[in-house]
Image (tube, rainbow over the protein chains, first blue to last red):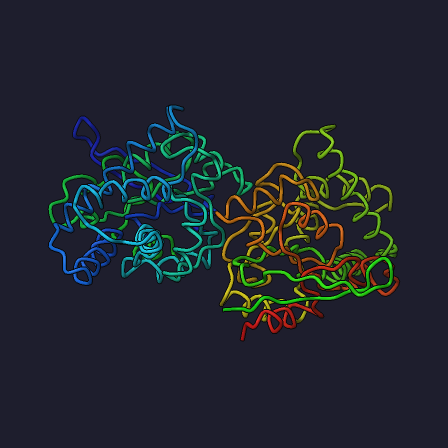
Length: 258
Length: 258
């Protein structure tokens, strides 16, 4: 039986404010995945650089990736506002990739090659602590992704990266995207639990804020290199999340998973 | 690359009718679970007999189980006809268990004990070939349950029985029960595939007929002892299913999974 744990943080008034949270009630951990579990940036950059080498092209792979990734949030927000019907991130990335290949003057890829490149988002390397940390956490808790990925994207990623999930839950199960409440509620409902029994684990403060608003428990794991060496956001916890861990191995240790 | 396979069966007119199916296109296998993957009868009987021993009761465990199991299909059919709102099989079994404890004069179980007994459906032993067969099939195919179980019920069962699924899909993802088309369509859609790319694997002919009606590929695996030694139904394939295997190891062999 895990004891109740307390955390303290400086309050807005500079006082340290005690907060006690019933971590003992947690039965499942729901992980944001892109950035929190897998290092998408390094993985995608490696494939873009491989493409440039093979095609003897000299395009700015970093800028290409930034432009590609930048399509992600606005398209999800359009789904969430009801401006476009449900569209998977796979389809969002596929459409944007075709535009960028033209914009960067990258010629001659076949449809199959474009498909394969688009699916680089299914072939992302886990952070070094991720598989071992999740494996330890799985001994005590149900472990699931709760990602804005497509369902099949998370299935394929788990197969590629050896992520030992108990199940797959994504935005596609709710047909809208985080931070919409329906995504978190869908996960809690499918798991047959109450919100406090599910801990959202993420490297992004907005995700934890939305999970907490639904009554879920929260754990922050910083990934200061997710966006490369110049990252300026999510470098640290911006609220008194129930657990703040260094990485997923450290989270396992803090939750007493051997 | 798996070659196209053909099967023949006696037609209604006694002629042998060739049928060629593109098994090469299959990318995912969706398994019925209760009966097809796990031996629910022996598992539940063992727990009922343990209860009888502990409480020094003499009730007919076999008849109790038959009465308990008999609540399953009618309640699912009521959900499917829209007579009652979505209700998980866990809730169906829980309600029926309380009725049967009274009917059989089994006294004195606490709420926790009734909860635990009700969740025996999360603690079912796999058939001897199941884990090894699924593990082999997983090397080539995405493997998922497609069960009328609750989502959490399938998650917990996989943890208990060591079923190496890539993901969990159940009737709860569609909020209605097999053989309603929505259940099969939901699985195909979540997997991002077309129906023929998903093979339904089941020990029950009705399940395969419903899957085939949605365009899915089909594999029959007989489980002649699912309902005990007196079983009279589903002893053999009742149609020209795309594959007819002896068990899940044999299915792996027929699909050329080492």
